[in-house]
Amino acid sequence: MLNKFFSFWQIFWDATKLDVTNFSYMFLPPYLKVTKTIKVGCPRPGVIVRIGSFLWRMVQTFTSLPKSAQMPLINEGDKLFFVVHRNEYSALQPVLEYCSNSRLLGVYEVGEKFPLFWTYIYALCFLPLVIFNYLRESSEMRETYRYVLDDYLLAYGFYIYTRQFLADKQPEVLVMANDHLMWTRALLNAARDEQIPTVYMQHASVTTKFPPLAFDYALLDGMDAAEKYAICGVSSTKVYLIGIPKFDKYQKSINASNKVSCVGVCVNPLNTLEDLSSLAEMLNQQIPQLQIVLRPHPADSRFASWNTFAERHGWQFSDGRTESALEFLSSTDAIIAGDSNILLEAALMNVVPLYYDFSGQNMDWYGFQKHGLVNCYQRPNDVVQELKDLLDKKPNIRHRAKRFCATIDTLYDGRSQYLASQLIDNIASHTSITGEWQKVEKLNKLDVYHLIHSTYTI
Image (cartoon, rainbow, N blue to C red; front, top):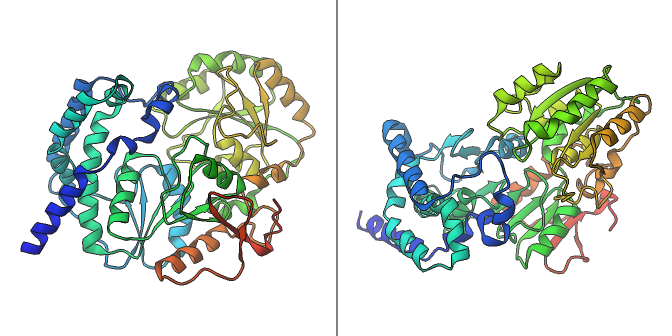
């Protein structure tokens, strides 16, 4: 008992040394300006508001006792997969199925839940420290506190609880599909301090604005992600290019049509209903024969409004909370979307991706236009004209995605979940990873490996 007491206070003391401002990465000053442009889901700013939000959510954990205080039921030595949102689950779930002794943990939507009751209790102890740090920060950094002060508090609590949990359960490996959210970065630090091997897998395309890789291993989709992470900063992470596991089960659903009859229109929290109105009217007027399906991003809270919009224009509606992106794409021939990973997912299904620049800024956030995956259209009539041209001559465009998915047109096309599970099993058992993997010499800041027989050239 006494050992546990001293162990807890050592963890508590280690928590005081954390730089929690680095955990909510996309709210740091270099990125906050862009993050604030999200029209839906961005936290309401204000120090008092954020403290109030923290206290309100803490009270909610009290009302759900004892469930909110129960430790997840896992066995010592299990392989742990951790997710925050459903899109991360879709990235990990195919690999989770292949790995033996694997368990899924989460905080919100899916997985066996971590008990947030204790997270909030521990976090509350750090309120004076967070306020003190806020008062001594620069005006630039104080702006970040106005948006995520409650996340800074929670980071302390989540680190303490998850580190206790990992010390008790000693999992063989911890796999995550996000590297810039508070939850995953706090858990990553806890795993590192408990010397639990960590593995990162993408749940979507990445940018050079992401944090440098801090995991022991990263299983990335393709060379595009590896090159971007090399730009993000120096890292000791070992990187393996495995393709995209969640695509495997849709290998037989790749679009083989030579014409476009069904078009998906994909919107995200950056877009407003007004942004889409003129394009919708033009599509209905000039190409009335098209079947059109509207799909909001799963994180968008305006599903009712978008559903009403679809009904008003005679369109069908895809609910991203219940229908996966690849299920949606399996029934479309082309899509229209802004800066979104669904453009890549469309190309993987041989569905023509049309990048419609809703904002007029042509940010090309993921480099899809730069690397030839998509063409950019800034006016509604340009999109309509392109769709008219595609009505009777849809091209095969899947090869364009090779840079973003290493296994395309190789022996391992459709076998990414097998590659990922084999690597994770090797990592968990501390077995050397040899055989078909060869180091890429081109990237100096990262140790990157690709399959010898993948026919991939750089």
